[in-house]
Image (cartoon, rainbow, N blue to C red; front, side):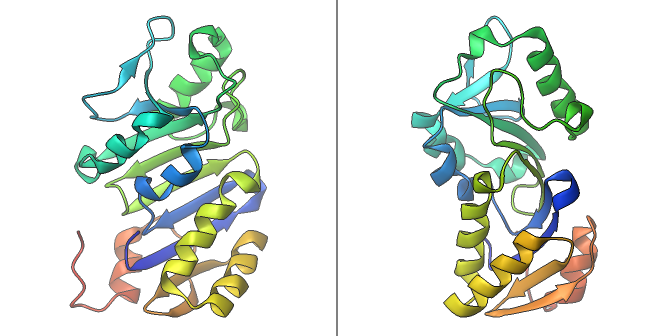
Amino acid sequence: MRDYLYLWHQPACNRIIASGVEFCDFVPDCSSAGGVVLLRHKFNDASFDLKNRFDFVPAVKLAELAADDIHNYGDFCWADFSRRSVLAELSDPAIAALAFFGHTARPLGGKIKVPGLDNGLLCFAHDDGYYARVFYAHWDAVGPLIGRSLDHILDAKLSAETYERVRMGDTAFFCYEGEVVECEQTEDMDAIQRKHLPRSWKKS
């Protein structure tokens, strides 16, 4: 996690725009699943499914992926899958849905759940930690991450209050050095950082 956090939750489309959240922050939740399918990446040690031709990382290797230099991948796009999923048995429509998300960073037909994948998340990030577009199939797939991220910056009382407001949605929040403010609803992270971070702060 970074030392700041931007969150804009859009419940109408089950989407969260975030800055300050890195892939390693998802690992505690994805590790209890089957792993992640990699749709855009530069990870050299991914596994490869011969049938659907997707790279993937099983749960036991997620820590290795998280330790890689994901920030310098540029675009990083992935979906989680459950332990019940058999990637080699994904249907053509499921493969098409994953390929579409990997290409456009939006769910095919607005459907976040991919048939046979039993996924909770579809995620697109740019410069890991700088920008993330997270689609969730159900709140429990993303709620723990939001809670941990807020706890990292805010005290327990303010974190709990902000969590409930984020969950309700439509208001954007910026958190830094123990404080939270309502802010612009935007995907322009440069503008957000310029406005809400001190000039002495260095983008990593």
